[in-house]
Length: 171
Image 1: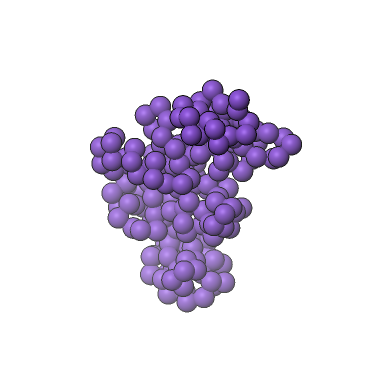
Image 2: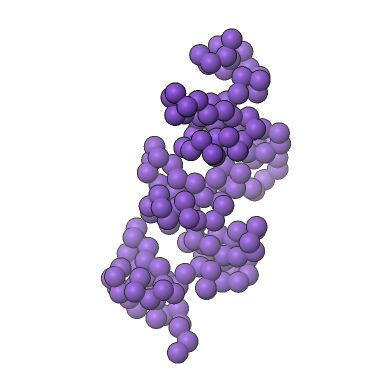
């Protein structure tokens, strides 16, 4: 039997919705809908649905990061998402948050975001926001200090005097 969108939409409870592997329960608005990757195969159709986003690397439609409600779900999500432990929610990675407008507009939006920083012509996650040593060490501008279990910006990448003087790790 072929599944129609209405088959998911007719399910009014999370258990009945998620019992069907083709459906997904959206807790915030208490609705059931067909999973984005099954419903859309064209970018324009995918991005027109606010629950979905187009993942360029795989050429597929995926759930938006903010519809992934647990860390485990977020961590297993497309490369575009990352868990924010401060807010206990899944967000788009900085590199994917600001994509519309000219470079100047994107740069200002990025710099105004407390999770992000502008580096080398692109928006990236601040070192202090990385949660694992592997994510931290995967960024050339960061280093992981095992004694504190935290990620910091390498002193050689600090360009402003005020940022340098605030860092207890740099001389």
